[in-house]
Image (cartoon, rainbow, N blue to C red; front, side, top):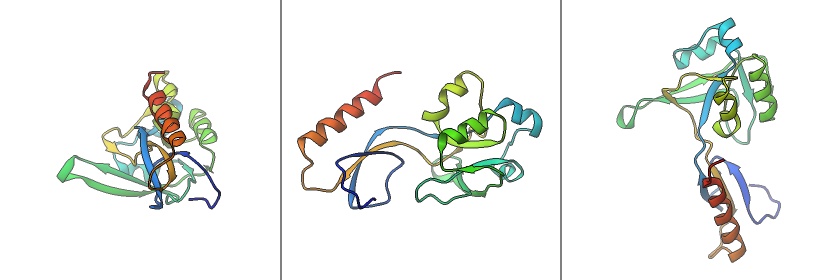
Length: 168
């Protein structure tokens, strides 16, 4: 975590730092998707390994391994994990830019459902490899570990959690 002082941070994905408390506020899975025009020109991957032959849009985020997508297939005891080294000619640290590139047909993107749901619903992006599980991007409130969080932190986090549960 940052050395800066903070009361509460909202983040996607569980923080790796055990010195903070992370309260899950809402589920938010990651989705593999691309524009219909990309699939029309390059075909649709049917296995995780097929991604190595596609232009994948890379996003540098936090402490996550860059350029490797971790996918899991199967359920419970028969889960198979795959780490796919992606290739692509576009990389950014800005999720909105990456979504724009995907919408423009430049490649396959792994992005939080939160960011792409409206485009999927309108058919501007198409999900692929839906039988694979991707690392979650659940939304967490993060605050410093104390014996008892202050009332203002509890009230704020409860408010955000309730707001994220409401439709729309």
